[in-house]
Every structure is written in C-alpha cells, then in structure tokens.
Length: 364
Image 1: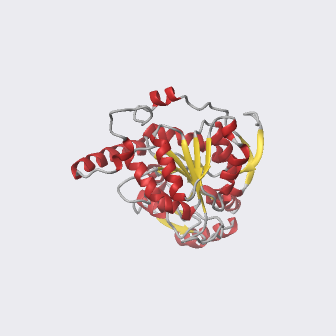
Image 2: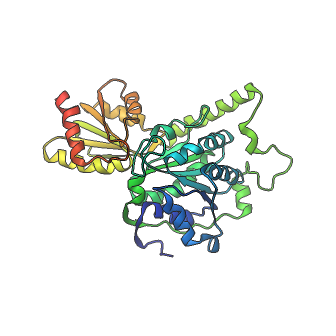
Image 3: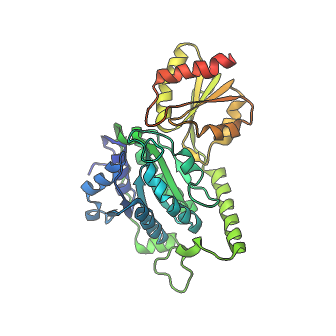
C-alpha cells in the first residue's frame, strides 16, 4: 500500500475504493453497473478483509445492497454502497427507510445518462432524485458533489463524519466523467476501524449488544399517526440544523463578476475553461460551485444575485438545479440554463456560446 503522502495516478472510482479502506470503513455492499464498477473491482483486488477486516460483498441486487447498508448502519458500523443512476433508483425505498430510522451510511452514485437504463455515458440527471429525497415521505439526505479525483477520495471520510454526526444517509453524487477520469491524488492516512467497545460508546443508539430495548431498525414503521408526526417534526428540526451548519461551496472570480455560472461536478470543471475564455474576451464571468447540493448554498447565491446582471446554470441534464437557483435569487436577476442530455457532455466553447446568446446578449 502507498504511503499517505504518496501522489498516485488513479481513476476517481479507484480513489473512492482506496479511501474507503483507509478511513476505517467496516463494510461495502454493492452490485456492478457501469460507470462505477471499478469501485467494487478495486476493493476485490485490494482484499481489505485480509488487512483491515473490512467486509466486501457483491450483493445479488441494488435492493439487497442498500438493505445490507441499512442493517450494518443500524449496528453503528461505517458501511457503504455504490451504484449508478438506475441502480440508485432501485435503492430509494431503502434510503427512505434509513432516513426515517436515522441510520448513517454512504451511497455513492456515479451518474449515467437516462431515463431508464439510458446510456453508460456521463450525466447529472439524478440531481432531483438525490436532493429531493427520491423515496417516499418528507425527508432529506446530505448530498456531496465531488469535482475531482482528489475530492472523490476526500469526501469518503467526510461523508461518514456527516452521516454519523447527524445519523443520516449521505449521498456522494459523482458522474461518469469524474469516476472514469485519471488524476493525481493524495490518499488519506490510514484510520483504524473502531473496536466494538468504541462503537457502543460512540453510537449509544446502535443495536450492537443491546437488550430489552426497541430495535431502531423498526422505527420506520409506526401505526400511531401522532407518533409519526412527532418523529417527522424531529427530523425537520435536524434538517434545519444541517442547513444552518453544513452548507459547502467554492467560488471562482466572483469578486468583480458581471455574470455568474452555477455548476457542480464535471460541469463545473468544464465551466472553469469557459470562464477563462470569457475573461480573455473581456467578459467578467465568475462561478459558484455547490459542494453540498443539499443543503444548497441558497444564501450565498442570494447575496451574489444582488451584484451580478444574470446567472446561468450549467448542468449535464435538462435543467434541474436551476429551480434551486431561481428560489435563491427570488426574481432579482434572470436565471438561464444550458446543458446537454443523454450522456452528451458540453464543451467549453458551447458554454461560452450559450452564455453569449442566452444571457449576455439579452441583458447587455
């Protein structure tokens, strides 16, 4: 294994697998689907069960995978799964159960084009599925959007930290570009897996070694509507706290920007070059990159909307994040969208042309 300070060239999917081993993950339960299969394949090659004791299991389906994460998380263990868009759609019932039962866990979604089975090419069309809580009921999960191979590695431990801090599922929403691209990455240092005693101490709610108490796995079912309402109210208070404390974003050249791009993941990477091209032409373009898609950086976008002439949402979909941007600006400025669908990735030149025709020419 590489030293913690070694710089290694690897795919985003591979970085997730190595980071999971290093950050003390107790178990991975997954099912192969392009473009995320390298996560499971890398774990199988690394054989962490021989070095750290981490369980790695190919389940019979995505439904089985998420329910294994449900069970493992209920015992206070750091467990995770990964899939791609249609596979994550199958997991939505389990994610809803976990949100209700307040079970921590990590779900990695390396998005592909849809709807349906669609294509194995990259997309960002699961934004609404993941940020709105794609299962039934009133719930949210924390959604992190990496934009580099380094963040693919870094966000594994961050996801587990947030999942256990708030007892909630966390989704890492990547896409086929970030998952398949190769970049230099510094892997995190090894973190030992927790002992059973440490799990009991850190997770007093967990089912491990508990007797004569209600099993928290069952708390997603309650026949008393008033009890269920109280539980929903507790969940909403937790979500409000997350919205106050865990918003993450990154800005680029917003200080003097006349126009603002909002983009996440690989769309943000492509937009960086578009900003460079615009600046060369004298167009003052800046960008805000949401790192947490939920909670969304609503307040910061609201502040920037008071300074810029217009905003454009760059997404590899038909326009899903644009609704959150429009909600943030409250009609102060025009908000446009540009994106490609079905697995087609826009080029920087396309984005520049869209900026000029859809935003700048209209607003001046």
